[in-house]
Every structure is written in structure tokens, then in C-alpha cells.
Image (cartoon, rainbow, N blue to C red; front, side):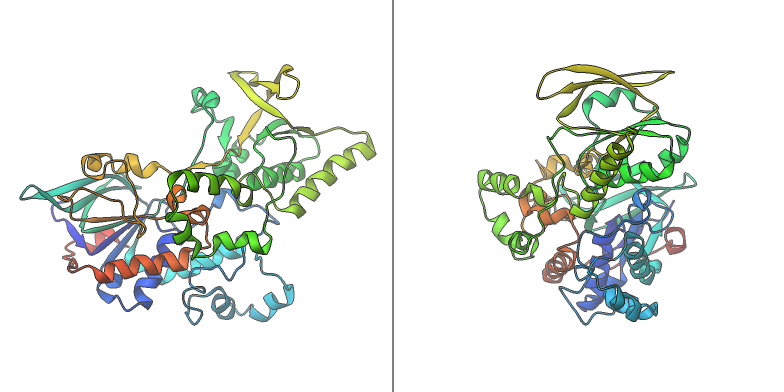
Length: 434
């Protein structure tokens, strides 16, 4: 690519966070930013957690915490207006629920994303970010991406917003099996389980919402498969969504969490961990309990619930995946073999550090300010914003939908305050956005 296009803002990823930002820029009257932004998304089209779009799964968060409502209830991008546009508002009201199906909320997000198709480049994987130097200062950034056809593109910007979501966490004992398609993370569940459609004995590792949903999905897929539900805890505990506790997800709590000392924040996050981690919805827990109860009624013990159990070692051969399981109460150990293993083991949110490694001398330990900007040295002039990777500093809501609307407004206000904006010089627009 001989000519390099320049944009006022480049967003890496076009999931809920950057969709909310695109909307906020438009609605806050930041036309220079809104019209001269480019969002680069590695997926070929919009999709949100596509491999966990299971039947009969619902949102765990109110539809009112959509992309905009808390910031601007009059916005055309509310979930309610989406229902109106789809001619389903009255029918949804009849459901008498705050929790739409995950399929419907994905469709809402896709509908919102479609309004920005001229500013979005799908099928683009950003693999490198390089500094542009002038007078011994970093004055801008060069963003390198690769399309699905292998072609590489370069764009320049003064402002980068990274919203790439989490990557599946693989426990260390499983990492030596990277590339073995019989072991996969829940993030890849739908496509991976189809690739293992002959598997009869399956282990699900984890105790959160994803693990619970996958167990129920496997239970309903066939009458003759056997599933071991393996958790380290003594039991599955439900999420605490009581109203006083839920206040920690309010936008104003971000200030409260950020202002705490490191020790205080760590204690706070630990205290409220049960609101977001390893805590399925109570109705789902009740369904799972019902499955195991029915096994007792019929004296047909197809599945096993292995609580207080951790995976001590992992081996694999042509006959299966062999897990050494240790009972944490008794210390007893046994080896169980499986045709497939699903790791519903959570996510890591530090991929931005690898992506920004060429800038590490300017960004230090990647500390993020209250305004979601990564703090940098004085000779580094661009702005890099981080969305969805600031839980340790901004609170549990940072990785969730709860604060999308308000966070996007705050980033927009920072951009508005900047003394200079980048005027785009798009020289190859058709090569970037189809």
C-alpha cells in the first residue's frame, strides 16, 4: 500500500464498546471525530460471542443497560427503539421481562453496528502498532492490519481506542495441548463441539455461567453422551444480583473504585467477586440440579457432578484426553479419560500489551488513568484509550455492558477537550471500508 490513510480516530475492535463510542461521538456533536473515525474488526461481519449463542440462553443484565439509555434515553439507538423498528415492541412487553434472549440482544447490537458500516472495516486483524517519530517525539501512530485475503494495510492516527474483548484463559496444565482440537475454550464452543460431534464422554471445567450453559447444552444434544461437570468449589453458587449489591455496577462507582488505594481496590474486588465470576443464574443452577435429581429417580447415572475437584495433570494420546483429578477435601486422586474437554475457565484481558509492545518504552507498565487513557512519557503525544481491560483500576463493571454508555461519553468528552484534532487525509478509502 503506497498511500497511507489518516484518521482522527482508529478503533480496534467493533464490539459493544466501540459501537457505543461511535454512537456517542455522533450524538455528542463531535462530527470531526464521528465522520473521520475508522473501526477495524477482525471478524468478517458483526457477531457477539457467536460460539456461545446457545438455545434458551438469556441476558444476565437488564436491556436498559444497552448501548445508550443510561447516557441518553432519547437516543435512536436504544433497545426499545430497536424493538420498535423491528415491529416487536408490543410483543416484547408481553414477555414481562428485563432480560431478552442472547440471540435478540446480538441482533440489537448488529442493528446498531449497521449504522456505521461506512466507517467499519471487517475482516481486518490488527497485528502491529508502530510509533511515528518527529523531532524526537512520537507524534502519531501507524496501525498495521491484515485482511482475510492476506493483504496488509496501514493507517495513521493520533487517537487509538482498543476494545478487543477478552481472550480465553487456558490453565497452564492444558497449554501443552495447544493445537489438540479435542481440548477447547468455551469461547470456541459451538464450532469446536461440532468438530467433536462423535465425542461421547466430555468434561466441562469451570463453575460460571458459560460452564453451566454448556453442561445443559450437552445434556440436551444427545441421550447417550456422558458429561462430567468439574468444579474446584464445593458447590455452584448463584450470582448476587440483589439491588444494593448491584449498585457497584452504577457508573458513579467507577470514581469510588478508582480513588481507592491498590490494597483497598483489591479487597473491594475480592468482596464483590461473587457478582460476576463463577456464579451462574439461579434458574440455571436449578435446572442443573434437576438433571442430577432425575438421574437419581431413574437410577441412571449418565452425568457426574465432581465438586471440590481440581485438574492436577493432563495427558493425551490417540485414545483420549486423560485428566488426573484430585479431590481437594480428601486428597484422593484418579485418572479419568475423555473424548473432549471444554475449558469454561474465564478470560484474560491483557492482549493489548502484546499489541502495543513496540510502544512499551513510552507506556511503561500500561497504567490507565481515570479517563481510560494509557499513561505515557512526555515525548509521546498520541492518545491510547483502553475499553474493557481496566477492571483492576476501574472496577468490576469495566468488562461488562453496565457502563458502556457512560464510558463512551467520558471518552468523547476527553476528545472534545483536546486542543488539536487530526484532519483525515483518506487516500485509499475503498481499500479500507467496503
